[in-house]
Length: 77
Image 1 (tube, rainbow, N blue to C red):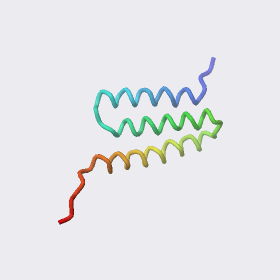
Image 2 (cartoon, rainbow, N blue to C red):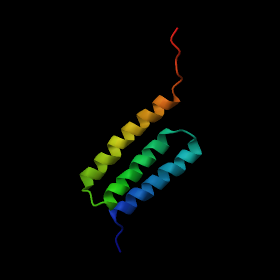
Image 3 (cartoon, rainbow, N blue to C red):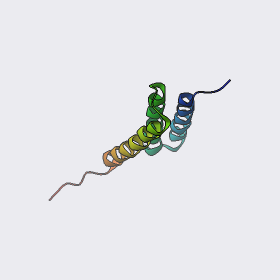
């Protein structure tokens, strides 16, 4: 019995989100969500390079969004 690539993505996403719960940071959650979207791309039938592209791009974007949301807002004087 072989495991599909999509399930491997989902297992890695679950491990990352679980690690996020232990650390309390946003960054592992962002990467875990990106990996989960890589799994969605695998379920949709995307090629392996496209799956990694989806996960990589979303990992960067979600991490930057998290960084922007957690940064203190500076008031201009």
